[in-house]
Amino acid sequence: MLSLSRRRVLQLTSASLALGLVDGGRSSIAQDGERAVSLKIESRTLDVDGKAARVFAIAQADGTPGLAGEKGKKFRVELVNQVGEESLIHWHGLTPPSEQDGVPLLSQPPLPPGQSYHYDFLHNRAGTFWMHSHVGLQEQQLMAAPLIVRDPSEPPADEQEVVILLHDFTFRDPWEILQELRGGMAMAAPGNAGHGGQMQSEQMPGGQMPGGHGSGMAMTESGGGQTGLHGGMQMPETDPMGQPTANA
Image (cartoon, rainbow, N blue to C red):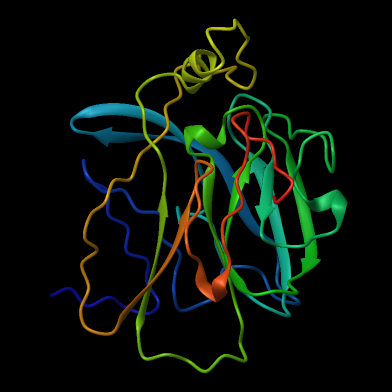
């Protein structure tokens, strides 16, 4: 039986299970008087049944995927684009000022390669959320990560928290699949510059999370699906282009 520290991140990757975890014991979002947390849009390689898959990632400088924070505290983040194409991250579930909402050409221009945006607003709601790209099919290529906001007024529970982010996976180009779903209609694949259209997304099929008695688990799901969330929330859907629906 595996015992997990409350102040450490457990990250497991295997052919049948890949996990994106956020530290369950401390806030990773800069608080009042602290400098902004650097959050990087980058690429990485996964090993799936011995086959390499090139995908995106959203991670802190130490490799921790996503962010965790507290209601009533400041969300201070420097978002850095380290991939060779435009991108932008939407803070799904949060309610920032419109100009910091991360929806390209609606709230902000896309973030060019090598550039950064700074975000500074107040957390006014707690919950199990996620962050993801709204540019092309980048979210289908794993450009997503957990975004957990805790309510400090809630009594602490005697449990070990583990956050798991699930994705669909295919070794095929997502644009090719979308073209088939649209009846073979020819279309360009914007947002693939620098990857040659070979970026892949990741599926995280069912698997068991090691842990002992008293373990707690918060789950989010990307890829347009829905899942039950902490606090009774549900994950709204996005359309096949990765754009928000009326509920996003």
